[in-house]
Image 1 (cartoon, rainbow, N blue to C red):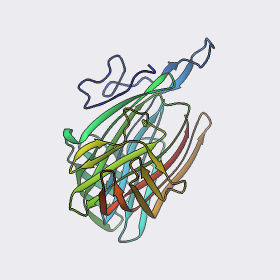
Image 2 (image 1 turned 30 degrees about the vertical axis):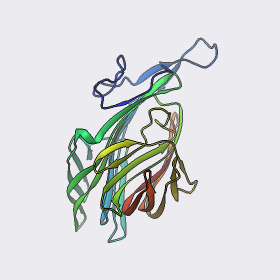
Image 3 (image 1 turned 135 degrees about the horizontal axis):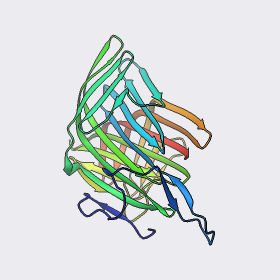
Length: 291
């Protein structure tokens, strides 16, 4: 298991693992370090998260499963109105982020978006994780279009989306910093990115990726500012982040604890390869989980 590293389109994915769309068992056994004979039981975790970015509005929604415990959340950042609306629930039924769609029906909030998913924008990564494994499938630079209604306000959405799927048996304590966003370069090229520290970031096969005109290109390791004010790439390029609004939550469910902060905002700077970013929007995130 420790020698398992994979990144590709999924056609030659590792055999013998219950990778999606196969169902992930709630529990798995992972060996303990040293010579202790009793294996550790590791909770299976999976989620499908969609984040959508445009100059007018940014939004996100997700379905999450940690062992037998479900959760769902959504958020809409209406930039022109300066209003962040969000909700998190410990049961499912208000959020649908299935293939090709993002739907929210929660009180007076109705979101109906179509996601123009394209296989050529996607990749998946399998990473050994302390005697177990994690998996992710990502695509970005795809179009998201539809309508978001918050109370009596209607927002027409025509934006860029990231679709982020994860599954596996993450270490009991998992901490990560992540950024995703999209924009246009000074030369008019469409770019998007998803980069992380602390999860699926083990060389040679990391999930760190920049999409240029819809095509994914793996990047190297990254480094985040402690206050989430920027991210630096291995080649010296960097993005600066200006926060506009932030989601945040802490949960303590005894055996499962989670604390995160995810601000929405705008970016400026450069991406690997000397791509100077203009008119870029997205998110930063710090997440600390005991699961």
